[in-house]
Amino acid sequence: MPRRTSPLALVLVAMATLLAATTSCGAGGTGTGEEAPGAGGKGGITWEPCEEEPAVECGRLAVPIDWSKPDGPKVDLALARRKATDPSARIGSLLINPGGPGNSGVNGMFRPAGFSAEVQRHFDIVGYDPRGVARSGSVTCSASVYNEMPSPIMTSQDDYDKWISFNKRLHADCRKRTGPLYDHLDSLNVARDMDAIRAALGDDKLTSYGVSYGTLAQQMYAELFPDRIRAMVLDGSMDHSLDAKAFQVSEAAAVQDGFDEFVAWCERDTGCVLHGRDVRALWQGLLEKASRGELYWPGVTGRPVSAHNLRWLGVILNEAPDWRLEAQVLNALDGGPVPDNMPGPPGNGPVSGNTAELPTAILCSDFDLSLRDYDEYADVMSGAGAAAPDMRYNPMPMGDMPICQGHPVTNPQHRLEYKGSAPLLVSTSMHDPSTPYEWSANVAEQLGSKATLFTYEGWGHGIYGKTPCITTAMDGYLISLTVPAQGTRCPAEERQD
Image 1 (spheres, rainbow, N blue to C red):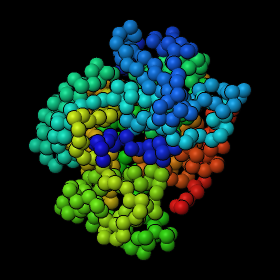
Image 2: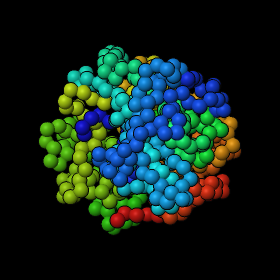
Image 3: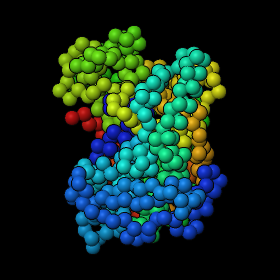
Image 4: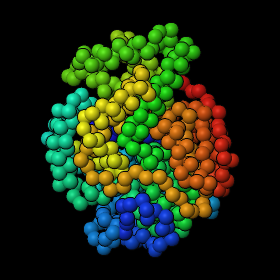
């Protein structure tokens, strides 16, 4: 891969292909204050055709790096917009947060629209790069320092000590290259940026869709500005109330569930190239081969695939999901034919060039994943392993946790408090390998009576557009504010074309 991607930066596979602040949670309910400073007001964004796609308009909005100093240094947020197809039916703007952290909402706008024709008819679809991402001041580090990163999995106190020492150099280097924005990356700041965008777009209230990590900024917005929400879809939610162990154990259980669903599909579908074989034994054999440094990706001979990186397959190919390809890839790694659409090697590796991006710093600002020592790390790993007998752990957040050691947490975990009157829609699938079903259920419970949990009984990460049942219900909420009944579910539709 071109860079070491944040574990949650690939979490958006299904949808991304379609598509003065306080830093304490206690002030989250004061949402009736003045307009966001620096927002520019209506007309504060100058739009022009994007170079990459002239049918899309691009613009920039300057917002304070430190929202407690509204007249201080600014960062330019990059935005892209597809205007409503029927101006006479236009309701307003639909602000999209693409998740990650590290996914570009601007790039997502250059692909075919991921929303239904009816949503496109009624809304300007607006994507943006959150602060610290892509065109909005991406977190940048020296490749020479970045490439010295130790193994993401620790096996001793010595490994833990190496990470602590390395992180001092890494975070100092990234802070120097990124500038003062490095200390203001958390989702509370992104929520205030969202309000600045809302004001600059000329919308009295916010209509937004967020998926995966993008839901965390929405949750912070609901706490900070509860009276400025028109409609908000949180699709595959983060749970900001979990400590480090609960976070990792629930992630491990989710990725194990995704693997179990894949195995069950392969057992019942003769179209699976591994049908009739012991898929769990095959997977275990590949992990053991990778652990010995003997597993190579087809066509890539320079570097073996580590067991840690191999585990990424259990995440990224279960997010859509693409079980047919997953079976073909595992078969190819076991000596079978290589499929025409064989993806590149999974996971992370060294970067080339002079710089590297580190969107993980955003996660580290929002979640306290610090550990006292190796013994506490081993306890977390043990809990994850018990929850995931085949996968052992989710490689995305487990790989990020060492990077977060020693990083300041400016938006620590807390239970949500929503005091607004606008209904919120929390959507999820039963089998999400990246943001577990229980996370969305917890978020809906924390948000209270105004939040509706809307469930797809199938698979994947981010459910908008997966079935007509889902799309109809979610469009009705976004367009007409028709909220599905509490507990509404859409049946699973298995598609492996």
